[in-house]
Amino acid sequence: MYSVLYAISPELFPTKDHGTGNAIVAAANRVFGIMVPTIMLKANLTTSVLIYISGSLFIISGIIALL
Image 1: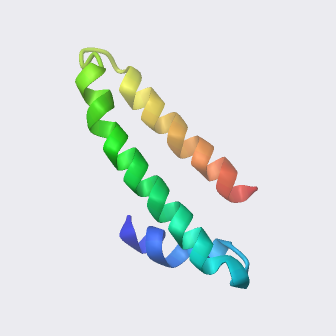
Image 2: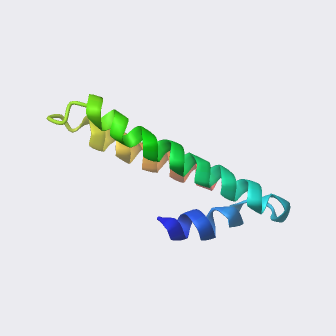
Image 3: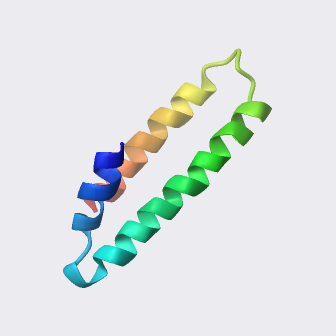
């Protein structure tokens, strides 16, 4: 995960925006890292909805990367 975060993600941005892109990706990593335990405390672990949500986030991030 960190190889993608610190190597590939900044390269997706133009040269003058590498630092800003890296900061945005790192900030999103921290924010969502905090949100996961909160979601897990409130979630119903007997259903498979969380798996579908996780899979949809991967698909959405792939679509955003293609754009």
